[in-house]
Image (cartoon, rainbow, N blue to C red; front, side):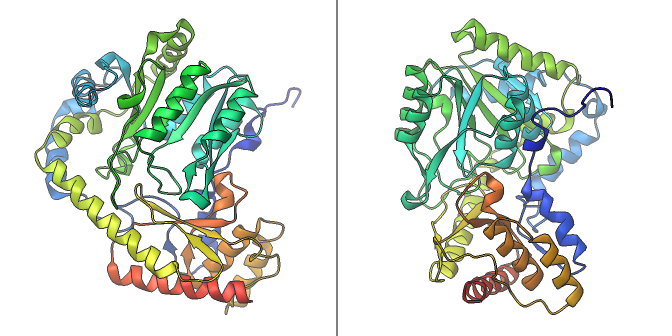
Length: 429
């Protein structure tokens, strides 16, 4: 080509969560998919009463029409009222913008930032955020540490130092509850992050996809409750909460849009970008007020939280005694992170693979990869369990992420026993 076509940030796009899928399918054996947070694929039924609501809406022609670019007015009014009921920053329907899933929102939020404006995010990082932030700048993602020795809590000193000594940092990203670690940040930590943003004149992005999925003693605290007068964006969706991941329906709530003219112009650019797509999908937006406003919704959230909390404890109890790894009990989201102790992973460890052709494929796949990715691929070939290496979450710490989503109790028990045995076998190989 007479001109280079490739964007400077193209090589920064990585999503190990799905990149492992073709590798798993190429092995030609049954797979237990623990790589992606899709409750429906893992056997959780979409609640019958929600199905009835959606089915009724689907009979109306209006469900198949375009909606306003920002989203359905009535749905935005409903969501604004819910946020205002938390007694924090007040918003209107005009402060809400719908997207085709939060992946769409992430792409635009980072893609329409000035290239020199960087957003500091967590490590381990959810790869959609870290890849999008790195791609928009063309440089490696800027990150702060989550401390595995302190239950994956945010290292606030690390945030402040990186903000203080790098004036390219324009914003701070927090995922709460966190993906991949499952840690939940309470009001005190959030207020300290807001204080940093206020003192250094930054904006905040909080991914609150899992805001209503908390358990094991944690309580949700949303950005709107603590942000005060700092400009910020909260990201929400129905994918995990209903759960309806196939709806691809997410939205952002903008707080203090007019705090500065620069932030207001940036938010306006997100709406302008969405206009080029016309709008987001109508049917799930129609369902939101009817589902969330239903008296059964609170019980739905409570029963799911209890179920997920019990699964988290089962996984913790099974893996906590395995030599060579460290685990923390999650308090939110849909995931469980396993961390390998320093020095236990090498470049020559293996697991038995009976099929010679599969063994040959795996040996090619693990050439030159990170030690935790090597383990993950051998685990896949040996047991059929597909997890995601922690190195795929922009982390230098070796480990892997699995889900809390296997709905069948017997299958989950078998999976955990196989996993514990495989970890011990691999470390000792």
